[in-house]
Image (cartoon, rainbow, N blue to C red):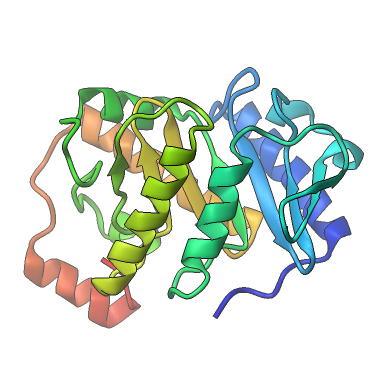
Length: 225
């Protein structure tokens, strides 16, 4: 069941707050990254080439349910990808109410080191990664804004949902993660856990949790892994 959309006024406040927090802590830089929120009758998304640290709530791009812009500055070029995430995740156990895209340093570094054919970016290193994030498909490289990337992400969401482990994040090769959750605050927390796991993996590559340990997390915490 999809999360109930938040009010537009609240969504504007939260996008600005989360954007500033991510920028000030180095999860995004310059004009990289974007945030969107699903509304009852459409979407809000950060403008193209906007700095997430200095967003103006009144200038966020406003779109109707069909993705047509009805207000604000021109929408981010990743709008098509965000909309596909909302659509593809709607019938899963991890539906999106907010989508956050960043170019987080350690995650991009992991992608640069990864086998281009790798199905997932990171192994199940820590219990909190398994519980709070789950599997993270590694999507082959496409240029920013490419429609092929949006379709690849939608297929990954469907494939993992059918296998019984719905996802809350994907990693776009060489670009950065797209993370989603009920609210901007929850999506930000998921991104934080994901980036921390990437940092640990680069600092200390280790054996993953074993099957019995992961099964225990599934039973105790309803982990999606």
